Length: 174
Ligand code: ASP
Image 1 (cartoon, rainbow, N blue to C red):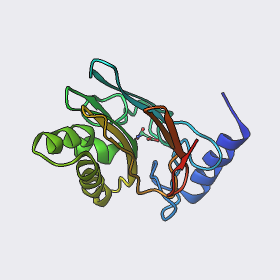
Image 2: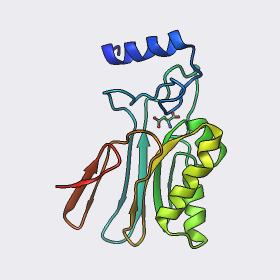
Image 3: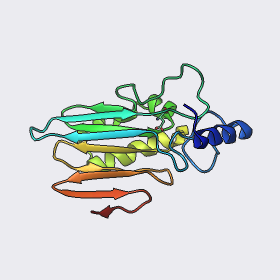
């Protein structure tokens, strides 16, 4: 499927001879959800019995090599859920794979970190490998963390009847 937005992004990537993918404004590489479009979708949830689940879907990185498998479908890299946390990541997948990023959050929570610290520390670990990105996570107590190091991350959550959404740094209630 060819759209004007994605074709323009592809051309920008090709003209700039950027490396495949990257999340941010500095190095011109393009995620499928850069610009006005949205591509990668992550979801984490806890049910009334305390069961946690995570899911992630993506179009990958602009300019990705044929056959590339990013972090998204790799359980433990871009997506993870166990009985403590559910985690879904977005960003340059290669760096999330190299750090087993989603599982890293679980490891840190198991070791006693708060969910927010675990997510923030994981992103700090991924960033130096060229993987600036974001993560959404929920723990078994219903704590939510949605930090990101990119300019924007479309995100939202529902908790106890309250809906919060945000694109830039701030969240607003609905
Ligand atoms: N992590 C995805 C990938 O590397 C891309 C994304 O999150 O937008 O394929």
